[in-house]
Amino acid sequence: MTAPIKVFVPKDTAAIAVGADAVAGAIQHEAQRRGLAVDIVRNGSRGLLWLETLVEVQTPAGRVAYGPVEATDVASLFDAGWLDGKPHALAHGLTEDIPYLKRQERLTFARVGITDPLSISDYQAHGGFQGLEKALAMTPSAIVGQVTDSGLRGRGGAAFPTGIKWKTVLATPADQKYIVCNADEGDSGTFSDRMLMEGDPYTLIEGMTIAGLAVQATYGYIYVRSEYPYAIAALEAAIDAARAAGWLGANIRDSGHAFDLEVRTAAGAYICGEETSLLESLEGKRGLVRAKPPLPAIKGLFGKPTVINNVISLASVPIILARGAAFYRDYGMGRSTGTLPFQLAGNLKQGGLVEKAFGVSLYELLYDFGGGSASGKPLRAVQVGGPLGAYLPESQWDVPIDYEAYAAIKAMVGHGGLVAFDETADMSALAEYAMEFCAVESCGKCTPCRIGAVRGTEVISKIRHNEQREAQVVLLRELCDTMLAGSLCALGGMTPYPVLSALEHFPEDFGLPSPKTTHAQVA
Image 1 (cartoon, rainbow, N blue to C red):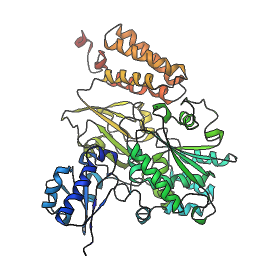
Image 2 (image 1 turned 135 degrees about the vertical axis):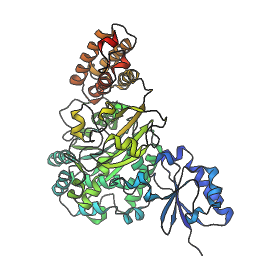
Image 3 (image 1 turned 90 degrees about the vertical axis):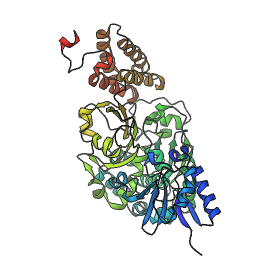
Image 4 (image 1 turned 60 degrees about the vertical axis):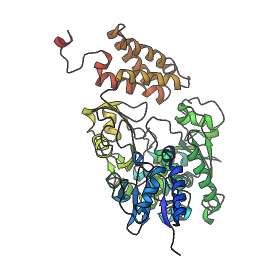
């Protein structure tokens, strides 16, 4: 009997949203009708989101990609002989040779889209748990040393050195310590956390377990935004399977070490992505920002020393332990080592996920990967780092993406989200929206954020309607200074970034003279 041919259909949220479930059902139905044996594997997304649903067929030469496939295309694909990898209008050749994928450096996302997300044997066949196996034989300080030497920094936006945070928790004596994963991915244009949790949940579990061994914590929580039901389901199933296989629990792989974890669903507040507000929510309280000190590393969840890291930070740890700190550190530039999964969104032809080493430029991401604007009109601005990120004009798109280089131009890398806008974008309206967003999402604990964002929205509206425009611009800049210096957390402290960048780089949208405009032209 002929072995069934493997056909990979993503069960990623983005693919399901455009009909992947219907495509999988149509493939199964058509194969049965024709008497053909297929084994449908529901994998994660490869990250080529404009080609979803991207279906792959396993052939002797490798996996051949077809997309974007709809249920109505399935019969024609069978007619064309796609199970043998034959040509079709939707064919893209070998998946690994698609330029969008081939030009990436996939370390953290090495398995996403390749493996069955819930198969432990598939995970191990592709290098899974190698890092944890090494960590089980190491001392806590040696594990922390590897992470420190790798140069890994927080991928959630703050870019704080992960090893230093872990070292602080390790050095703080306590009867109980915790590992908390911040999976409350609420920034506009970001989806890497979701893609990884849905497409390779064991990587996150492995990373959190290594973190537990490193700081002598025995329990962890994954705080996932409520809008991610498929990620929550994947994590819960993976945790159960890992526990059953001995990779979690009271005696991990008979090592004498204990670590277990659970998923907690977030309450739907943007502010709960801030680490101390997240801790308050985890404890069953309203998500208010805590004053620091004390740092969560010393007094965190339930008053105990706590490591709080983003999904991508923790998911980067297994490869560091498996391959060594030097391997990871060799990627990137300066103090920004390793890779970052950039998320391309907004007005782009080819939106998706691109994992590249630090040092890549926006030009490369927007055009070599993104393919330029979806509208066909010239791109004008890119917001990098979520709703608190600066709007960057074309003159800054050649700056290498690096934490320090971006700080120097008053921008931030953040979580790696990019939202592109074409020439029709009204930057004054986007600046007003940034202030309004802050006003809506503020936890209300500190005055600069709670009141400042409301006043900021009003001031920008007056500027846009030419009500004492020059005086209001002065007032807006002073208000932004107050918010930057006086806010308790990054929500109020960074909202001025998009506002001031829009004002600086696109003054004409506020009715102000452009730097290129002469006084004579204004008159």
